[in-house]
Length: 292
Image (cartoon, rainbow, N blue to C red; front, side, top):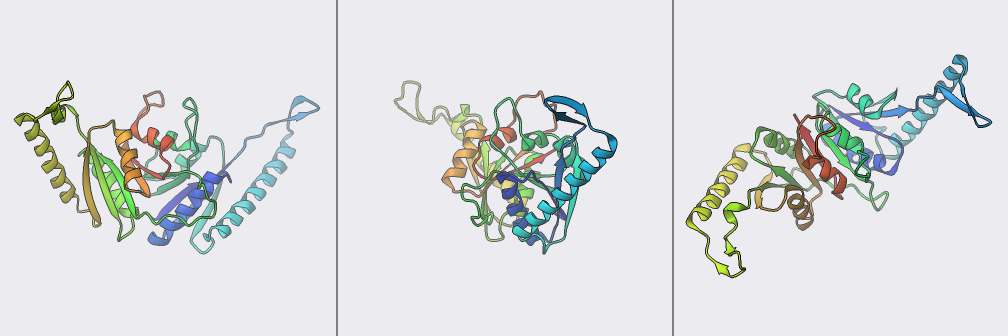
């Protein structure tokens, strides 16, 4: 985690991102790169009419925008105690997601603010889920501005036993506190455990031998998989049969988790919402996303 990239727009959510970036940078001695995208202004409005801005005036206007933005960013770095860290400021123009992707590399880590969005209007975190070359941590604005940043003491991770799930667990182990803990949540097909406890009429029933064996085999394989990961922090497993997003969000509430982690796959924007996008939209705590 040599560089932590933080796109900001001076809103409450990006303030939260700066706070989390400071927490991570202090642990990993990272350089913090603040990215701010300036508006592209080729036209102005005079007396209600749209007119082109002369090139000379455009140059002066852009210079003023950049000077003001740099000053505000420097003030933010000071306010969040980041002026004592190695830092850099990147002022860019155009699309925000494209700007972040231009700066980010596979060895970086992105921390960004995520706002509640309408279903038809994906936010920056959701756009980067399927495009980012490196892990992203999407965090929401704090309900209590100025409150102490959680120390990532407990994380809930959505896993399925794949190579991507291993990468997610490894990334989570890098941000969880040294004395913290991780709970890996694996969602299984409910069919093997359908008859455990009740039958179709609701009357007590005994699990079939096949169902009991299938469940037992799954549990043992999951426990072995967690052990083989060697995450270096306290790790436990939890098997659920609810839909993945519901299962992860419920475990985050029950265990009072500080963050959630999951995987995402590269894909077109038109593809259906994946688990990562759903969690970013609905989770009240930061969401770590690793894709491939």
